[in-house]
Length: 622
Ligand SMILES: [Zn+2]
Image 1: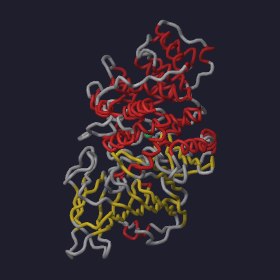
Image 2: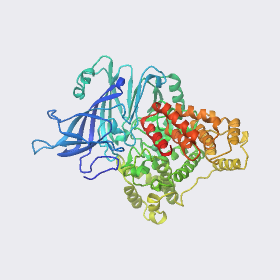
Image 3: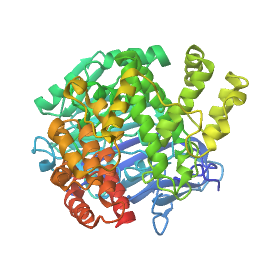
Image 4: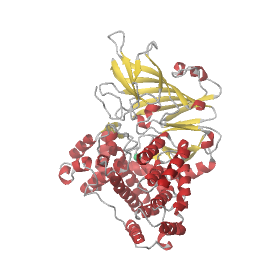
């Protein structure tokens, strides 16, 4: 028994599954998916096999030859982080053979943590239900049983059986949409009579294929009344079928092809054929999720300025750094997000210019300093490589792997020069593509490619040390310096003049607000809003930075706007700071009551991952 990953029951002595084919029946009235999964092992095996599950019912495990039942057991009580261990006995009766495949028949439950089921009133059109996934970091196991660790990459095929008036998309190649055929795929093994409902006239089958091996956290689908617009030769933007939403999205993301071309120049050929975008309902818990072939996005990135495109640049950058080369487990998450933040800023610099890239870096620098301060009682999570034994990755999610990881790579770039670093990255991607690696492998490769680097940069301090190393670097540019000096002048009582902010976009305001003192006089907050109407900004980055300042300054005039915001979006980037500002610190009785009431009322609108994160913030402080 040798665990591979602190967040998985997978065992290194077990063969990884190389392929899975799924037949999934979506039952919207009960918010349940009934499924059959056919697994192929990387090599024949006889013995006990461990899989991860969470909130799943396992009906049967079946032998591939004669469909005879194979013994299995589930751990008696679920681990609060890892879920329930499924142990399968692959012990052939005939001693000479071993198993190289098997079936699992299962059902999800409405409490599956990867899935958000929206009823019609929660959608734009209010006519049809909608369901979508978010599997990172360890939620794929709540959709189908699997070795839910990025160390085990899988290829898959999927038949999604959904109501005929809906359509499905996946982070995979769309093979086709057609009327269901009785018994097709493995649907004849479905439980509870769903095998015969499969071919009902009211249903349709959408078929998908992912023939490039992906870590399970990149498994993704959405089902609803979807529409689309073409925005480039390999890019279509999807959203709920509402013309205004689709038109705004198509306009916002019109520059996507140019970004892909710049990415290819920097990092090599785009490997995933298509780069489609799916704009989800406002409850989507992240800014974006880099699901291969189809990135999932929050609608809050559609705001008609450059920063929405920067989220797309980030998710696009994952096509090389992250999806091609993944961290072996979440303890090395910086290899995924630090590299991607670096790659994102190089794409932004190429497409939007250096000033925009520096503003982006500056916002990140401020964020890193704040995160390190926030973890001052738990410095482990200010390390790039850290110990996550017994730790829920969702509760320690922070900007550290993104921004400290970025700073580390930027430090190496400064040391060896950009041309040499560009060559290094291209070689790194070509060497490790479609693999999942750890920090040690990265360092070994770095030292081999750049002999003597450890004499110039303290690699151990950067990867294993806490806090921000002394040779990290705050960016410089005229625009960045100007914004910071205006924020400093506010402390002396001077608000920026209208001509000084006339051409500011969201990012300038965000940087300005984040560099103001954390607590102001209520009168100053009111004066700032009276002049610049920040509480009404259509840009949530600006609005949330302002509302956070208002809460910390106890300027209660804005609490109704805080409540409205917490009820209309479910992106954790906004929920975290607002709930935290409401409940953290002394003398917050009124704010705590507000936070509890708003959460009770808004809870159902949040994705289960966001529900869990807000719960843990409230539990810590109330
Ligand atoms: Zn990312």
